[in-house]
Image 1 (spheres, rainbow, N blue to C red):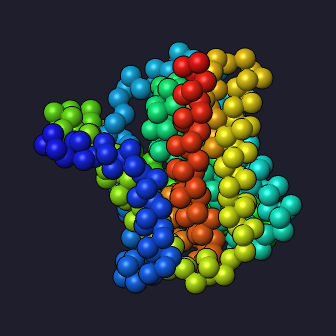
Image 2: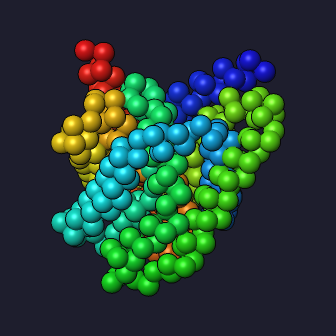
Length: 312
């Protein structure tokens, strides 16, 4: 079992490598993943969320109760900065509708679970990062559809109720189920939890592979504007998230947590929502896939920079 635990740590620690390899394989040799139907994306994301639920304990919510100010600051930054940047980039770069929908979806989603790992590596306030991810995920069924309607509703019909139900089924229910299982079957989850980083990493990589392979031709035809939009979206989120903590006089560890949480979105959820609710725009899933590749790469670099500042 110890060998599996070490393998899980190694795979999670090299998430960027796996994501890049899978993306390149799916892009250059689509049949490697096209045999997997896009409909698999949603249940796979549910498995990742269930794993997140297995790691949660009642004590994890203590920071929310003891330091609500930091959580409120983080959530406001999360749901104001990223959606606003997404909308502005779409306007400034003149992105076509189906790409703009994908960028806005990424911006309106909650923080991604990978942010907790990156925050830990950056030696930031990991408890705050976990609390922010949990709270933003719980808020997502209401906030994400509302923001997408506000920012993209003039361009396309947004099924707010359908999106609410999707997030509830794919995110909230698996997390709650995982939380309950962890509470009542601690002896079992104690052995399983060390394997979750491996499961989550591989699931995210496969999701990216599915999206990229099924849209490989269109991705290759995409202009560099799409990649530019994704990269700017992520980097501005990291920078503005840090500045928000700075101007509110939070310590460096908390600024680091907020920066990473804001800059690293649950792009897997954005990809799933695009696949289910904007099927008439296949390219809407592409920004989420590209974001998944890029934010793990940039997050690794950001972790090294933030960790260096803390140690200095």
